[in-house]
Amino acid sequence: MKIKALSSLLLLLLIAAWDFPVQGSKPANNAFQAEPRYIFLFIGDGMGENHILATTQYTSQPPPYQDWFKVWVSTYPQGGIYEPQKAWHEFDWVSQNFVTDSAAAATALFSGKKTANGRISVSADGLERYLTISEEARQLGLSVGAVTSVPISHATPGAWIAHNDSRQNGYAIANEGIWGKPNTTGDPSRLFYGGGHGNTLPPIDVLIGGGHPAWHANNPYVDDAIRQKLLSESNLPNKHRYIERITDSPDGGSRLLAAASDPTTLKLVGLFGGADGNLEYRLADGSGSNKENPSLSEMTLAAIQILNQNPNGFILLVEGGAIDFASHQNSMNQVIGEVIELNDAVQIAIDWVNDPQSPANWTNTLIIVTADHETGYLTQAPNVFPDQPLGEVSSRTLKLEKNCLTTCIRASWEDTNTNTEIDSGETIYWAWNSTNHTNCLVPLYAFGTIKKSYSAFIIGYDPIRGHYLDNTAIYQFMKAALRQEIFLPLISR
Image (tube, rainbow, N blue to C red):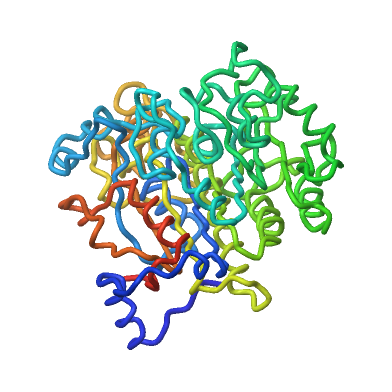
């Protein structure tokens, strides 16, 4: 059920409050620590505005965050910049200049500090270990979780759970997240075990996602030593309960939820995945996913059930990571399916907050939906700027999508003469203009409580999108919500 708008008078008051923060003294440390709070950060990896709009058009259903507060966010790494005039006058500028990777973007989102591409919650020179929002939540007594449709130690969840010189050191990252120590199951001299920056204790309470080594052999994210340790500890006190993908057992979601519902399960690790490390793609029509894996919604619900045991509250990262994988492949079918997966997971969180039995409500909860960057440079047609509306997005036009010989990278169009080229007069429905990330602004949607004025974080004005923030501001919003410094309801504008 979508969040319903408040009365007109109250809406006006709340909008005023958003732009003009309530003044007052900061509450005593024990005052805000005694009050529970709940923070959800949903990241559609690679999800730009047109990814969302394409999904909305295909489903004929707006996303659950459609009417929330919305603002635009820049994503460049350390040393970069977003230049609005160039972004809208030089078509290739956003795909060729100051493009972030997921590691640098996630670090900015979680720590409020920029870094170089490839770094995981450490400075660009590797000399400074950044304090992340998940660590700050721990310091205040909250529980911490992360779920993802890609490997559990991939760049985005990696920056949430660990600190490392390189996103490639997935074994060390997974070790740090699960056990708090980057070299629990392997020496730092071993491949993918190096680059650590000390311990992160206590470790994460819930970590669920892909990367199972039985389906993705020799991957840099999870090795068999990690899996074997999880198996051996699964039924021991104060250890993570372990659930994994099992061949010919199409009940991955139900087994995960059963474990989460067990009152003896206090911590949980779920390891699933497929041949590429990520869960098999959900396609636009709902097909494609393998029931040996849970859905992102089931992973989100399982995480909530475990984390909610803490009366102080929790902070949860949910990543629709395969949106990025699909966008690199320029597959609209996969993109739409994965955006639907993320939207369904957001709805799980909304329903939980709205449940009368939940300790959460919209005065102690903040939900943010955003992206780390855009991937694929998805637009109406080749070399057409992304502010123009896409054409028809339907099951019919999904079947028309294919690679071009020279006139585009990949697009959906009426190839009337079947020459695999976009010719004059042929109808184009959408086009991919890159197979990589871009420096486009991405949208941020938010609902719940926020403790900072939006106005304070504006860093520039875009002639098409309007005022925009830097991605480091999202950390500031979460930090303020975490510490409950002042109260500001956040609503749609």
